[in-house]
Amino acid sequence: MIPVQPRSPEVYLNLNVRGMGPSATLAINERSRQLQDEGKAVCRLGLGQSPFPVPEHVRESLARNAHQKDYLAVKGLPALRSAIVDWVRRTEGLDYAPANVLVGPGTKELMFLVQLVYYGDLVIPTPSWVSYAPQASIIGRPIKWLRTRPTTGLGVEPDALEELCAQDPDRPRLLILNSPSNPTGLAYTAEQLQGVAEVLRKYRVLALSDEIYSGTHFDDAHVSLARYYPEGTIISNGLSKWCGAGGWRLGFFVFPSTLAWLADAMAAVASETFTSTSAPLQHAAVSAFEDRPEMREYLDHSRRILAELAGHAYRTLSAAGAVLSPASGGFYLFPRFEAHRARLEARGIADGDTLCARMLDEIGVATLPGSSFGRPPSELSLRLAYVDFDGDTALEHARDEVIDEAFVRRYCPRVTDGIERMAEWAAG
Image 1: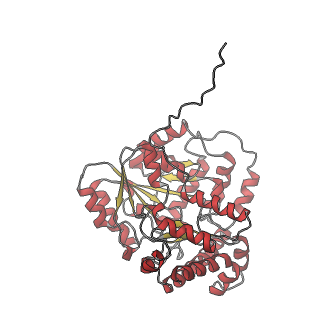
Image 2: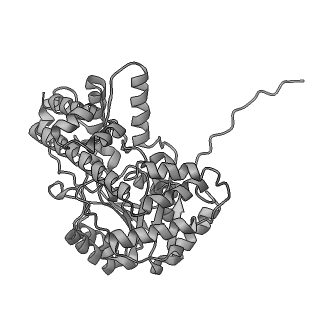
Image 3: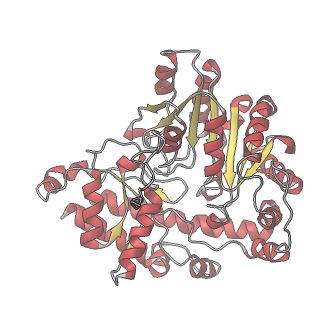
């Protein structure tokens, strides 16, 4: 009898995912960890994970609720949904119904679901967060990149949005507007949002207001797009950035009553995919949205530390010839080194990927190229995240010390040193 030779299964990958690699932010985190395991010193300015601990009262709430084991409602724990709408009313002055809140395992999953459920083009500015466009590609949605101007912070502008929508006025579209922004640090003003809202309303464009960094606005002056376009805006937020709980994977969408049909459709799909979000985490999260003195203190100190780091990085890189906008919130800056192109090309560096790769190899500073965020590959731009420091220690000393440049040099030395090495390397 002739033995049958085993054959490997045929490769039948969905065409939408063929050639797709891991998220750029997660990939740079793994590469940085690998280099550190090899004994190399790395300043990790690639992954934008909050350096601060989850507030103590929220951690205590999780411990008290560790026994919670039941499946919860698909849309989320009723007490949590009520706490979220109370929080939105308190911070934005907007009223929503708890029935129109959808809690999920991180906003990333919910953003994927909304693109799956809503049939329309994805509209995003260049640059934008690394996962918006890949999610649309996985689902097979067309992606429309909005032109932006470096002089105004690389954000969504009414004239660019008008130009795009006027080409096909009745086409369904989903605009994602992120404020404060990853990767630029831009936070939109009320005036800017009003201008964008006028165009959105004119063309009936659905808007997803990604406000995951709202609590990190340096001046505690975050403004939601929903204030000016309430009938067509979904608010997206969660615990990962302003509450230091990225690994908890808890996010939420808040829908106006005019979009209840979309909330219900997403919940139906959620019931067939993730079912419901972790019960202990949902019970614990209720305390994060309560108006507590300790939470206000936590946010105040966190914002002031981040603002000082952003200011130090902006001054240092600007002095070295980089072009960038000052940040108003979040963890990021987006410098462009075109002024040094001739000098960098003489060193064999002619694009953003090479710029970041050489910077990591030669001075141990990990960043991400602008091409990961939708910028042209040839552009000498990158995103840096100023979060590689011990947030527990920094918060502890923030209670009693002045938060100034000396403070961040003392308690955030990897970030300040990495920024200074980057500036010297790029200009050298």
